[in-house]
Amino acid sequence: MRHYPVYVDLRDRTVVVSGAGDVATAKLRLLMRTEARIEVYGADPVPQVRRWAREGRIVLVERPIAPSDAAGAELLYGANGDAEEDARAAAIGRVAGALVNIVDNLEDSDFITPAIVDRDPVTVAIATEGAAPVLARKIKADVEAMLPATPGLLSGIGQGFRARLGDLGARARRAFWTRFCFERGPRALEAGEAAGLERLLAEDDGARPGFVHLVGTGPGDPELLTLKARRLLHEADVVLHDRLVPAAVLDLARREATIVDAGKTAYGPSHSQAEINALLVRHARAGATVVRLKGGDPAIFGRLDDEIEALEAAGISYAVVPGVTSASAAAAAIGQSLTRRGRNSAFRVLTGHDLDGFAEHDWRELARPGATAAIYMGVKAATFVRGRLLMHGAAASTPVTAVENASRPGQRVIATSLIDLPEALAEASPEGPVTILYGLAPRAAVKALGQARGAL
Image (cartoon, rainbow, N blue to C red; front, side):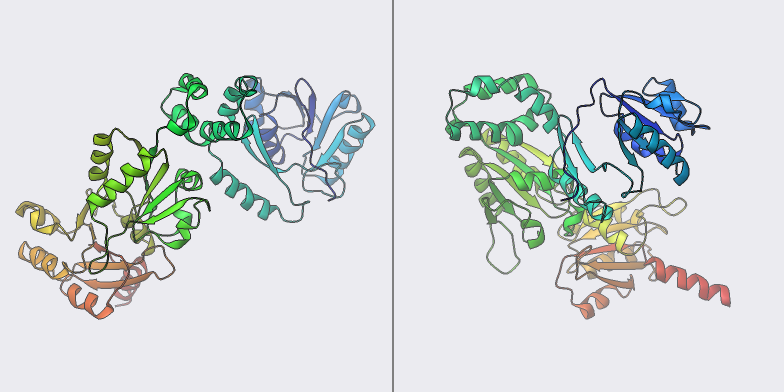
C-alpha cells in the first residue's frame, strides 16, 4: 500500500488551489464541502469560479500564485493544467510546509484525492493508487447505490443516543442500531418524524412493528432497479417475489433474508392473491421488514390496490417504491419514444386480461392515425385486439412491435403490422413476458424505409 488513507481535519485550515480554470473546478466542488478556508490563485478565472467567489465560498485572487501565498496552508493543489506552472506552485507549497497534489500527476504529488461518497458525517473514500480511476468511479457508484442518503443525518441524531445505551448488552445495542439506521430511522426521516426516533429507546425489540415495502423491480435488468429498491433488498428480513423477478435481482437480497416465491403461473402451482395478502400480513405482524417485489412498476397492472387494502385492514404500515415499467423498457429496446410531437399527444397502457371492458369510443380513438399504446400480457388477446381496431378504422398496415424479455439477456424484437400481428406472434412463440407496442416500429426499420423511399 503506497498511499496510507487518513482523514485530515480541515476545519478553519487553509487550502490553496493554484489555477482558476476548468481543471480547478472539479477539485473546488469537493473542497467546498469541507470546513476549510479555500484560497484560489489564477489569472482569467472561469465564470463558475468567479461565481463561487461572489457567493463567498472561496477567496479568489486573480493572478498566478506567489511564494508568500502558501504560508500556513495545510494542502496545496496544482490545478493549472500546465505542467510548468503546476511544478512552480508545488515548489511554493513544499517550501511553506504544505502537502501538495498536482492534478493528474501521481508521481509528483504528496497525496491523492480519492473518490468520495459523502453522507456527512459518514464518508467513504475509494482509491486505486491512481492505477484505475474508472474502477474507483464504479465502486463509488455501487457504494452510493447501497448507502441511502439518510445515514449522515441519522449519525448526527444517533450521537445523542450513545451515552444512554451504555446499560444495554451488546446484542440489544446491535438490535437498536439496526432498527435506527436501516428501518425506523430512514422511515421516520422520510415521514418528517425525526423527533419520534427517541421512542426507539423505550421499545421492546420483540414487540417492534413490521413494515412492508411494495417495490417495483423494473423489467428485469438489475441495473434498472432504483437506488431505493436496492437498499431495501439489502435490509429486508423477508422477500416475497413474483415469478417475473429474475434471480439476478433476488441475489441482491442479504443472505439471511427469507425468500418466498409468491408467483402466479397460468398452468402450474400458484399463490392466489388472497394467499399473498395473508403472507404479507403474517410476516409483518411477526415484526419483519418485508419487501414485496413486483415486476415493472407495482402501480401498473401489479394488483397494488389489493395488497394495500389488505395491509390497511390489518393495520400494517407500508410504502410504495416505483419501478421502470415494461413499456419504457420496450420502447428503449426499439429506439423509439412513446410520445412524439406531431404524432401523438396521448399514450395508452392496456392489459390483455381486461380488453373486454373497454368502451367503444376507446377503440375508436386508438384506431386513429398516429395513436400509440402499450399492451401488457396481450399475446393471447392479439386476434381480439386486431379485430377491434380494424373494426373501428385502424389501417391494416399500422406498425406493431412486440418486445419479449425487454432489457433482459434474452430480449427479442418482433416487428410486424396490425393485420399480421397474431400470426407473427404465433410464429415467434415467445416464452418470456411480452410487451406489444401498437403504432410503433423499430427506429432502424423506419430509417431504412425512409432511405429506400428517398432512393426512388
